[in-house]
Image (cartoon, rainbow over all chains, first blue to last red):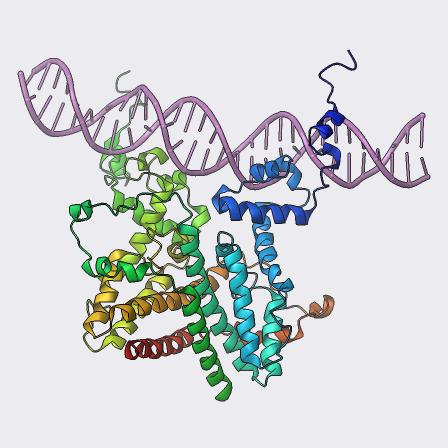
Amino acid sequence: MPDGDDIVDADAKVVAGEAPPSTRLPLDRDRIVAAAVSFIDEFGLPGLSMRRLGGALGVEAMSLYRYVPGRESLLDAVVEAVLDEMGVDEEILEAPRDGWQDFLQRLAHGVRRVALAHPRAFPLVASRPVEAPWLRPPLRSLPWVERFLDGLLAEGFSDKASVGAYRAFTSFLLGHLLLEVSTLGADVGPLDVIDDGEDRNAKPMVYPTVERLRRYLGEDHSALEFEEALEELLNRIALMQAES
Amino acid sequence: MPDGDDIVDADAKVVAGEAPPSTRLPLDRDRIVAAAVSFIDEFGLPGLSMRRLGGALGVEAMSLYRYVPGRESLLDAVVEAVLDEMGVDEEILEAPRDGWQDFLQRLAHGVRRVALAHPRAFPLVASRPVEAPWLRPPLRSLPWVERFLDGLLAEGFSDKASVGAYRAFTSFLLGHLLLEVSTLGADVGPLDVIDDGEDRNAKPMVYPTVERLRRYLGEDHSALEFEEALEELLNRIALMQAES
DNA sequence: AGTCGTGACCTTACAGCGTAAGCCTGCGGC
DNA sequence: GCCGCAGGCTTACGCTGTAAGGTCACGACT
């Protein structure tokens, strides 16, 4: 039976809403990386496997290897893709226009935006090994380091001061943003058992101060604290500029 | 042959230098966690598997499960163990003695010491999910938060100022220490190809500034920068204290 | 003294992982 | 009309975490 039921009827599938399998988007590297980013955003890094990512793209796992050398380099590509989102951020300047403080403020907020846009993926920016020991996350790609240094040099910073500012700037960003996204990623979790029941004194209250200040500890002032710490950092960088 | 060669001669093994198998250290939880820490220190996190850890302890993988619920909680235990090393650090004070600045200075350096002692394990302190969203790595255990807050409160800080200081302090530590250990862990790697050959202009020099400042970028001033940034942070915390 | 419970470790087994090697098939060019 | 090959798929291997159950020495109790 050459036209039997076991022959796939592509047209019927098209009618049923499925795209023709052979035309279902030709699967290139960017599409794979983009899918990996959304996958991590949705299910977290441990949920990402080559087979599942293939499944999400309607493809077998091994097909991905035609475009990506392996899982490790895929993760590197994810980091690169996330940071590349800053490239299309209109708020970030190519070079200082209204002073270096404004330049760095915009850059810092740009990094913060991508961090908040990908709370589950951003930790990868910190944890993936860097290509060179002097590249510091989250500004871990050559174009951004170049832009940063050029920006400060153009504003009269010395070589040493520019590099010092780069180090201070990255330390600041990494600490603040990692902590901010970690609190975001945490409460998306299984929620566990938040025992605010009346049996609080069931376990001995060994940490009275933490207990007492829990209200304050739970408050989220990330945005404000980021702003203030950034302001302070800029002052410190100004000093570095002055004394060089 | 009841006394044939296939009967294990325990005494012979003892003579040969091996400990009697049944006495070969009874394998408790602390020993497992300690072995996991050294394993990560030596081979890195990806090298740690239950089977290999068992092997390092002279035991099958499944035997570990009698003391540890699973790999995930083992990693949590590793984080706890690493941070607990601060508990025996004589330099860290239980409570302020010569002012809160000294108190925080000692605490900061104590955390830095354990980070530098375990460069490959320290990132876990940041990446493992925290138990509550208001616990901030690296000061992510209740006893340390309690000690921190109590210390500042005893020095006249308000409730809010103490919590604010906790947040600023942890952000500072995480950023600086994560970046410092990442540079440490990087150059232990396979070393790759450091092409400092004469064919540097083989690829177009697209990032001339980075290229030009590479000498400065490669310099390591971690200790000094940590000190300076800490000093600046303490000033900022002093302001938080004053305006509350 | 003999029996039996139990704790500590081992064995087996399974599903899922990353990925090396090779197969299949439909499309474009000669 | 045929062939080459790009772009997928299949199979297979060694590894992983871990559930389930086996084995065996030792200490306690009758």
